Length: 150
Image (tube, rainbow, N blue to C red; front, side, top):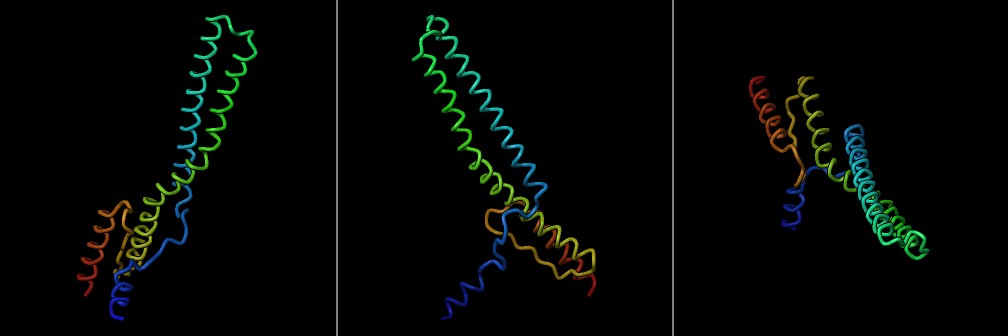
């Protein structure tokens, strides 16, 4: 019975309730990742298409229906792969930004409480979150201010 109570007491005092906690930051990052994916894909598609076209032209196969069908098939496959990768890029973008945006929201809330005189603030972050040093500095600041007001 005691082990269960100890395990519950050692858990973090919060759980993830939502993935989008700072929409401006997270959406901007995701759009940047999507545009980068599209630019890289357009470059890859153009280079593959031009290489195949140049090969067909060099061997005088541009009038061969099978060769042209292969060129079209390659272009379609690359396009379908990009469309399938887009949701994966969005998911990865949300996950990556959440590790920064989540702590940033908690740190800003703690600083807001401190500006209103509440120095009983303690920021705890999840394992793997970014900005641990900043959260520790805010906790140290809150401890210092709390000891001065006593």
